Length: 330
Image (cartoon, rainbow, N blue to C red; front, side, top):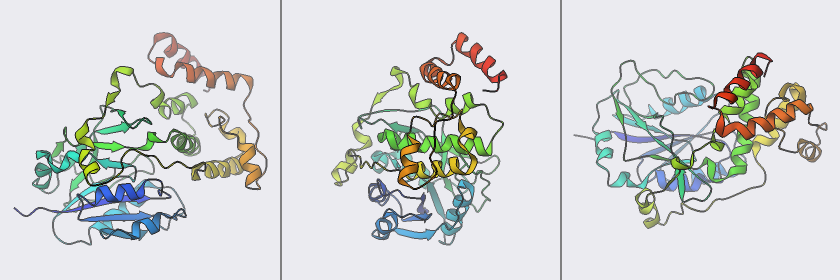
């Protein structure tokens, strides 16, 4: 049986911190890597252009829309003739290196068209030695049958998921997620997420937004595991560095959040947990209007309470207080 062409689909915007590592790893399993770049100015495009398997396309949109960028990637992949296996990964995500020896990989390659491939997500911690893994499966692979992709602006399905589609749930091959290896970068991104939620879903309670974007502070110790050797060993043998972290002091989301504060006013976001960052310093550096923390003493106390109770949110007393706070508009 002829195997499908394996195509990796990846959206990029200023991912130079990890993109070279990603492309080295993806080049081991993908026949093509389609990069949809959205106005990167950190050298991401130049990195992508160095790799033979990369097809670099432009995402010219000024807006954040996961649905739009996924359609762009899928449309480009469908220009490649013949059977196709689409694997959709962000630049900070890597297949575990055991795909080279795993029977699951052959199962995927031999699957019929229309099959959805589901992965488990191993979140790598800053120590680069341990991880935690949510129980949720993620549909990030698809034996393409031409089905329409239906997505959403944020936290969108990445692939077409036909009704009543067959699926394969992988248990040997996982996806290594490196977002949490740089904690400050992650915090910057999650501040932006919280502002996006407030603007686009004003009906959402601040408590619920907080809990969603601070889930990483409530991982039980018994869920933290040591990374198995075979998840990285083949990459090590290939000379791919999987342990260092390229850190920067500046993240694009900080300036984007500052722009949102300038546009909508600080009061719009006073209940979002974004005030651990000194916006007055950034506003001075960028020549913007000065920004002050708009929170009242009660707002500050409630943010402290949310932080303190994040691991205990399922306790009855915390649930009771949460219910009351929601009724009060929080």
